[in-house]
Amino acid sequence: MKIDQVSLTLFAWEGIPPTRYHAAAKLESGSSALGLLTIGTDAGLQGHAFLGSATHTAANDGPGLIRFLKPLLMGRDPLEREALGAKLWPMSRLVSVRSIGAVDVALWDLAGKAAGMPIHRLLGTCRHSIPAYASSQVLDDASAYAEEAVAFRDAGWAAYKIHPPQHPATDIRVCEAVRRAVGDDYTLMLDSTWSYDFPAAIRVGRAIEKLGFLWYEDPLHDQDITNYVKLRQKLDIPIMATEYPATGLESYAPWIMLQATDYLRGDVAVKGGITTLVKTAHLAEAFRMTYEIHHGGNSLNNLANLHVACAIRNTTFFEVLLPDGAHKYGLAKEIEVGRDGLVHAPEGPGLGAEIDFDLIGRKTVAVLE
Image (cartoon, rainbow, N blue to C red):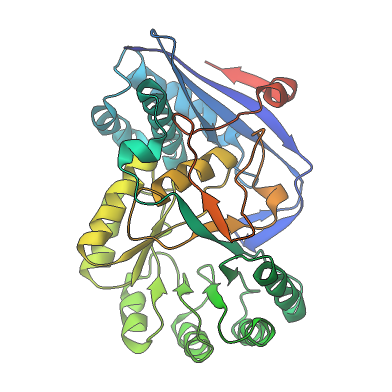
């Protein structure tokens, strides 16, 4: 079986609600473009992935994928993912890691279809469901966070994570308000999105320790390993870093060796696909560390993330980033959270996705080949 097709269909995504998580992840225009990556073979099988998100249009990364990655794929056996990955990763000097991730997801989708199995089966299924948590955007005031947290608690979701306004005193008040609203036993987390200096990170960290938060995510600049080491030594609450920078497996080594974080973090978009996530999760397992999977930025990436979550032992939750309208598009059937707070492993071959090809056809902007 050989690859004989690599194409990217750019399709419009309109009516996206305004969203904000931090300075580099916000949307005010209400429109973007996703790319449907198709990797086809001479055996008639195809693998698919989405490229892009509401805040990162595929029009940015698509041309580089076709120009630099497609020539490395054509004529190759799609099941030789390790060999192909070794060819693709040096191109990260020229293309985004998101492009490499999309190719890897599409190759896994194709492999699952060739085997007639869902991807989590190929990886080795560990579970068939996993608890979901709601992950807020930045809201107007403390009462808005409290009301939203209560709503998800009452709907049966396992936990609620706060993306705060990113001002330390305000952020503490938000965390206090949410804890009062949901009670002492409900699971809460804080993701401060790289917004504090070291003194502020200590101050907020000590406050949420007292409030019984589960983890403290990305309080410092994403490259500030030195201060993460100090922060972890001074706080008891588990620290979670490593979501960024957007690089592959090797980026985790210094964080582990310097003991700069308690949990590792990543997703298929910013870490280069399913292959990197699985390798990193197993690396974390060797150090008795948890590997929590970040939201994937689009609907197919989230399916890919879910397959990995169901195939590894050292993860606890599935992240659902809010609002839905900014992160779900292009599928006829999206991942759903049940009244029991769980999402369930897909059972169709490959990703098990129901891609809305009719919508993509109506919204096509360009086809890159």
